[in-house]
Length: 523
Image (cartoon, rainbow, N blue to C red):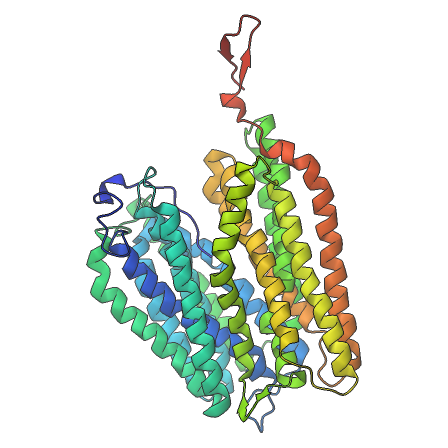
């Protein structure tokens, strides 16, 4: 996910839509496209390995952790990656600029994957922490720079982001394919090493083609004063030192950390941060009555988002384990690597994205435009229906049989349809429903829903017990019923909130007098 940047930088857009050098777009898009592709290759390739590696026995070269601990660590990892995008975006905007943030972030990510490739239990967790820090620095800023390639009036912006999004999916396919194959045919740490090589390729390409950005992100957008910069770097240094000391204390046995307990506290902490920040904007700022109603409509979207990702992110945990333990992966003489099932999401995204883009346009032409809340509710319910499929698949597994691959494929198809109904719609809702002067901060608050959802996902997956297959159907049924219940509530409230979504800004509202003239009213 990326944090949008509203800066125009019109002077950096060269020529007309047909004069770009990368599929008719600014040449800098190629730089960002390829860099993001390799970064996502490393991220998704390693993400697919995590739970499988942590739950594999010591004899298999894994860590031998329980599913509950492994899933909690997985949730903390994925949740922290999104959370660190908040300070990462701030560092770029106020201290070093987007270009340096992406460059240094990619270097840190590569170092993290190199550490993960070392066959040592201690270095594994250090590697995870390093990758989190690097991804938080790179991910929000590379997406923001894509937007800065275009002026506000440039009609290429949406298609530019569509091309960029294809880079994300292409990278994930490469990551799943390469790391999944190496995991099962060569070794765990070879797969982690492949992620490091992928990021290294992205770094080389980025350095060689940086001039194509024409100065985009070269300097911070809102630089701090020299004194404030020194203070900020001091605070950042102290935070990094604290992280290092806590990590050292854990490895020395001075401090004991229980992953599940930590995940529970972090989920509560992130949720409180979300509620407090939302409340401060709602109650503590001078926003208008119409803006407050829009914030209520946006709150529905945020709730739907957190619940959606808590189910969707089972892909890397419980669904991954189900593919390993209870799915018949033999096709002829070939055994499908466990992680390859996750590629189906990327394939379905590529196939279905044009259909959904055309669907919303055609519905709009027919004057049938569902509200953001209704679209997100349907996305949540459709995602939840995937777990109904898994409920029946798990029942077959509980009877002692390995199930056919199409059960997982059908689940991932439904999850992808739900994602396309909810994810881009939710991002659009944030940009439209947020008070204009708080647009950037509200995007940061919204990103917290990803963190909350990912950590809850890890806690839910901790209930998956591969040694007790009889309880797996109930796990998937609970996830499904909970998500469907929340989806129905949001759907019903969405019929009311659709009126709030279309309210004009109070400062721009106008009333027509009896003579037909228009008088502007100030809020």
